[in-house]
Length: 246
Image (cartoon, rainbow, N blue to C red):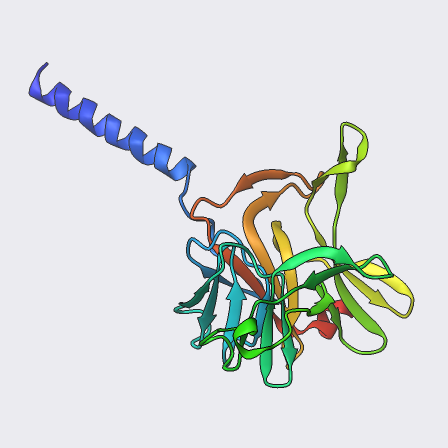
């Protein structure tokens, strides 16, 4: 092959390779929304329970670990390995319990986060085992449920689709954030289609939405793709959640 023809062939291959890379980006487009901020824990795969606030100390459970940030999510410190998600952080005075199960329901058929082997006295910097200090492991709270006041409650709504028509075996479709106010309910619109796993509100009234890298179709609610870098994702409302509701 002549040198000039060879150079043209190489140039064409480079162009085709560049186009192929552009068609399959490794990272999603930058998230930019006037009402929401997005932060990530690299390779966390899923975000679950959250405690604290982004301006001070924020504690987040991922698929298998607990992380903490004190600089608004710029860096994260792993403080505990769980080998499973934490489904709720229960605050009792100056103690925070990590709730490890969510299989029980109360008399109102509300799913609960229950049972704690570990607690922290310093917002998650260090963890202690309950049995070593004769502290009860029997703890519980409503799962992914926030009572803003006597009139407004926020809950994670589970959308299910029976497998082969069997109501006892279901696919979990994209979850919604459901607002209950004055005896009525509505779905809170959000500018993202990630699967939602948990909810939290800080003392300033900002809503934290825990999410996974799984992306769901807006019409069917079924998973259609996943973000390639597999982060644990947290969306935070920039305003008090009451402003988003109204």
